[in-house]
Image (cartoon, rainbow, N blue to C red; front, side, top):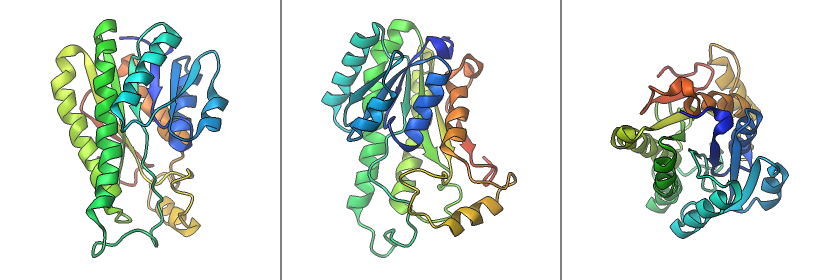
Length: 251
């Protein structure tokens, strides 16, 4: 298995929030990084350099994903070896404004399913020829602890991430014989990203008080934990869900 410094890592939604923290963590460890973005061109350009290239693509669109993989291989001269599915459809962790059980629509669910499931499906399938070329591959899906402990019942977001965990495990089973691991890293509410900016401070404080570590996880902390699943240390680990939330829930 490749060391992180030898890998070419795609981070979807890699220009902002948790995605940016993931891009920065992999760059710090010497990886070459494809910073995927949808609309955040300026933020993505800030990360571009000798070891990072910013490429626009809506991961829900298969042709755009295909083009992104081709551009990445042309830029670096080698295929993507690691896929981190971090892209998130427009969403705000605002408990007061969230749709309640009595009035949430199937369209809200479909929006989240399309981003989480179709996005991951597109990137993983497009990565497979490159994985075959290098003899192995790593997929890291970003999940949530909300389907274990719905502190705030964000119905659509939570259901989509639960489906992504199922995809993580079934793909791990199917792709394992090809030396491809598929794992998930799940945070709780992160302090702070664009999606969690609408969360009141008292909610952050309430969550922190309920954790053994007495704090709310940061994007950087979650990103650093994700490195394990890309490293040689995780070579015998697949189909797993690592919860990184300061111990709020135990998995």
